[in-house]
Amino acid sequence: MTRRQLTDEQWEFIEPYLPIGEYGPYPERLREQFEGVIWR
Image (cartoon, rainbow, N blue to C red):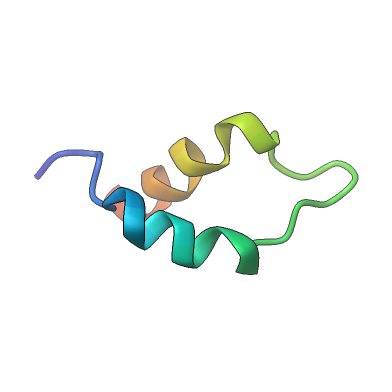
């Protein structure tokens, strides 16, 4: 299993629903962090 699991189309669908808090994940690394959680 690879870490890159989501297609670009799937990510475009999911991304607007993920919260970006004041101290939350860095927006530029959000996809990497999200896919890391899925991978684990």
